[in-house]
Length: 417
Image (cartoon, rainbow, N blue to C red; front, side, top):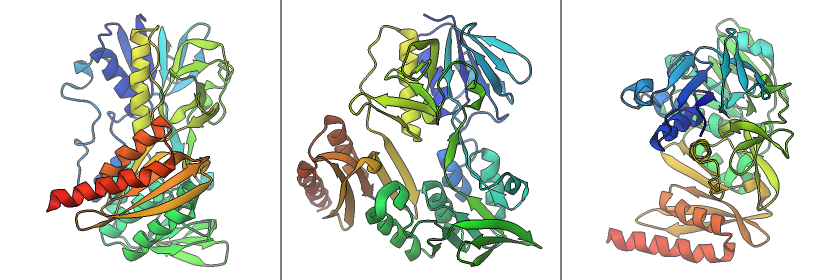
């Protein structure tokens, strides 16, 4: 067993790794390095509950009662890792400190993309990745119209939150159908209806060419010549993995850090392993043995599950990694819980299925590839996603799922009688 674990990244994956190590009986030293000076917090609420005032900053803390002391962990916050020497097994920090490790966990996550560096200098243009972003946006809700650039999940959640606060919102999308990039046009159309019904203005085929200040206003110029006036602009155009600090380390970094099924880092992308080095969460690019393809999954659940895998591997190096679970994601928009399992991008066809439950119609999108379930999306029906996840993990035929879901709907109606 390792005597000293260094975790780079005070993210949900990094903190959960430390917590799981202690829960599994690890009694060595643990140090967590975090670039932010804030105590670790959960990030999904930044664009939802925290922005809406439904949760406080204390509510989203990742540390339990007793904080770091409760898990006997040393925290180095407000300092970033600058390089890694896998031969000497040392992490170098920006303040000049060198941390030796027996096991290293890379949990540095991602950062938001931006359109151009100069936009970060505009006080009215924001991305949403840190607590300070959510604080600032909450304070601006009363200032006037908001333009959200990018109709992905972050953009959609921000649009939903601001509209719920009574703010005028326009959401732009470069494609012809919002949300189509992630979910395809079929489900994209359903979410488009949800946003339009709730008063969001949608501008499609609307690539942004410039964002500039004009007095108190911020002008968002679109490729077709339209100009949108805003008090606040929020960019939600994807994310970039934080792995530049690993350049020159001998690890293969290509839109993430390559890992095997146990999250052990591969020195050149295929092997051999870098001794004692693991990567988890948004920054990890993992090979799926069933497809022999590598994926980087930017989902909260994935980071938590991988944290447990790594903690178990550190405590018991000969343990066999558990089979990969279905990628799972959720989003809350206008009171509707949208849940997804699997990988929609791998589907060759999509079918929409509608079910009557207890006084409500529920919609499920089933994505098919070679007869198997590639992905599923449910709108407002959490119980159905469990059945879909089970089907994905067992490799079940899509043809069997509608009957399973119809039975769920029947039972919901019966329970309501």
